[in-house]
Length: 328
Image (cartoon, rainbow, N blue to C red):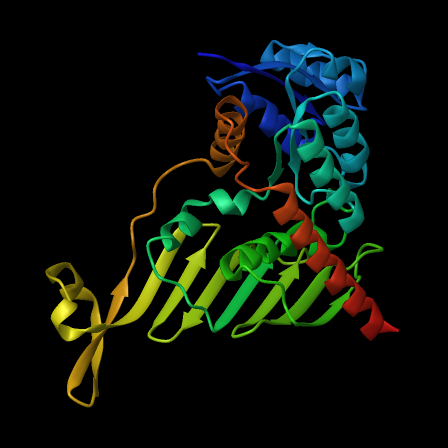
């Protein structure tokens, strides 16, 4: 099998995990790592039996593709240098610090004919994959993404750090940009917004999102409401719960133990059914790496394109702007 020579730039907490998992990909050959902390790079490289490169430029000379897992503020510069040399890029979210930078990288990827995939990992969460078997017409979406405070990823606000996962999912689900944005947020422990609440209005859907990096517990849940159905998605436990109305004649034997009641409307009786569909097992990070490699080797479009990541970033910027305007 043809292998993609890949390097990892940035081997902090997440970069170390990236490097270890790239080592497990049959379609990849991990050539080496680079980090501004060269002692850290040498330690990770030794553990994985690969090379620690003295500079990003030196790493690029030996690879076909690079995974950029560095602070957000460096994404644009590193990805631009890599793509200008014809290297495929996997960039951790958010794609860049600004929407303008993201647009420029998206255009550069097309110009250089390289794959540029962005690490919106929740797209590969088994729970989200389960939703694809249902017909979704959301009227109201609510999401809570809460995490304990950690002294990393503090170069951006919680909107760019955590909420952007849900922004990407909402834009992917609804395939449109919101008409109105109302947001509140506050900086508590950092110079940036640490907790935020946002209300987004679309053509026929209202979305309410909350993100905090000051929680005592981890919570990553999204609830989707539509006529005749309610979906609860737990991204942390990778589970989905479904409550829906079904015509009585369509209720199959496997539903019988989970019937919650019935509703009579005119001549039709409908049954309220609870389902907990089985979710496939798998590591979302391994899966997004695999899809990136397939895009390179088979010429497929990236699973999460730079254009999609740019739209999520654009929305995050609009939210930050709204928070600032309300705080003045």
